[in-house]
Image (tube, rainbow, N blue to C red; front, side):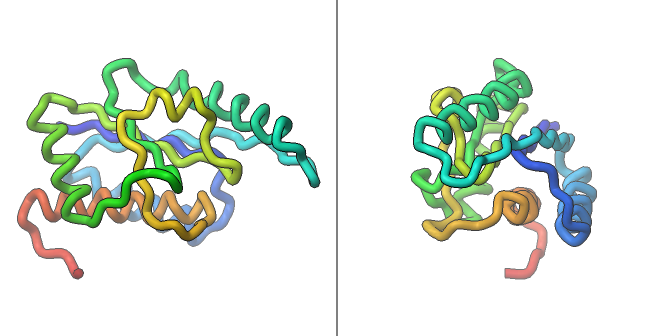
Length: 160
């Protein structure tokens, strides 16, 4: 069985987002072992300098890295990442399983993005769009796409 871990920066406070994540996490139990880790984000001072922002990303990165297993295949959501459609994401997950990569870690950074240390540990940088989305919303969107991937891999009907 595939083990999927989702690491997100920032606590999800909105009930509708928590319910969405819970729903897709529940649906995924049929296909994989699912684990979600929420990391506290760093408070960003108003008018923070680039150096301050890099320092905050570094601090968040230092909280993320201990949650990544050495043998895990890491996919980080990055605006500069590769764009895949749903079938391509499903194929990627399926190929990882065939190659014996049973641990996949997805990472969603905070509002400043991910530190270089986290990006360096990443096996695949994935972009959903050039648009900017709230990182809390991305958790629901990502879990839905992972669920869709398993439906595709199992040739099961799911709305398009």
